[in-house]
Image 1 (tube, rainbow, N blue to C red):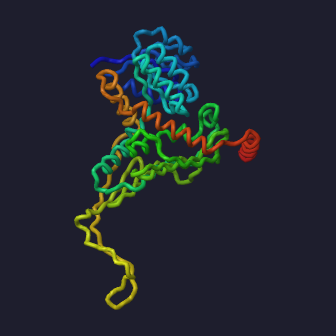
Image 2: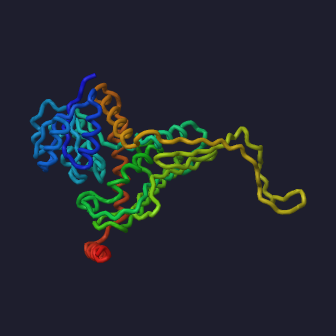
Image 3: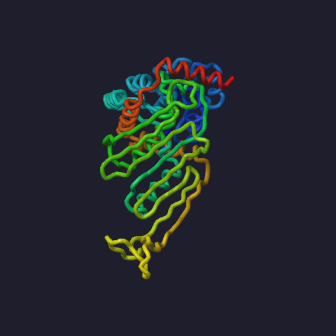
Length: 367
């Protein structure tokens, strides 16, 4: 097994806390050769923690012919520009989510990667969330029958005032968090086409100018209805799943799933009765029957985040080292970008005047 040498651009919450720490735990597969960051303190810490070289300017990595892979962990609004530069310089690139907020940028990156014969990948690690993986297994088994609706909610109560609350930085709940829920949801369509999109956005507790409440409904012929919510104004937080099928359903969180179903072959035989139903005394009644329900549960064992990160990187290693297909493909990311673009089209954000007024109101409330 050959070890891949990695250069990480950025040593912030993502670059260090997710990528560098995960890669350092997979030494048979990856070696952190270099990092870049504008902070001298972060560079020094990376050198000490990972035994790597460090640079203040990401362009210094262009000279490193020994590096196999670039991890782009810069702020969201820099993802497209830097990913394209590194692809053009002949590097494989793994970019943090969100890759882009529109389809045209994704197309440019896909074309650049193809022209240079390099791999373009996006770190959609929630594809490997244990609860989501297990939920897919239950659905794929067929015991729930035809899936009618799937709800995926990631809700909390949060007042944010950092860089990810700004539109100029590609902030807001849809791009910050919603890319996880969108990626999970879109896999249930099992198609590259863009579904019908209905989206509502609001700005509730954010001190920036981007949205912090998002509701998305996705529909497509002969596919389940997908209901996605990402809220920063829910006093009852949770990453919740709810699946409705013709034979049963699933309800749960990222740590526990409960599901129940009946077996059609064991159900009482029924036929349509067009007249009002009565009991033997002629009293009007509802139709009732007794179904045999089967129930089961699943519980998370281990650290969800570590499992997601390492599983993604192990699969990604084999896609580079052993030429196995990517599990999260650029075409899937393009589909996601099309949905994101439509969501923004349907929801023009606030005017500058409104934002100044809302910010002032929040500041007064804070004091």
